[in-house]
Image (tube, rainbow, N blue to C red; front, side, top):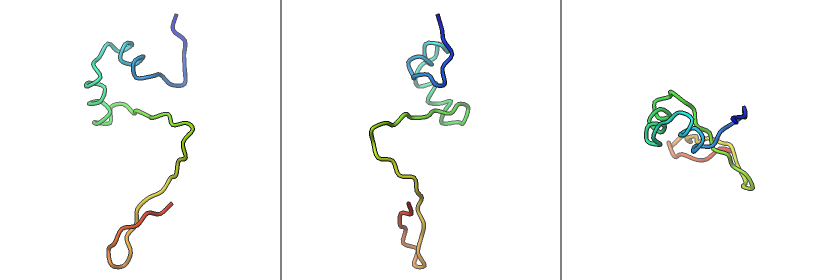
Length: 61
């Protein structure tokens, strides 16, 4: 029995679609599917990089 979920693991997707992992990676690299990573019990900081007047890059949280 298959149940509907909010997300599926990579092995589940590979089985359901009957494709190789390399093919799924190819689809993700070419924006045909979106892969997300579940992160838990880890600190996570969103941010970006910017450049100062001299062109030196620095992190911006």
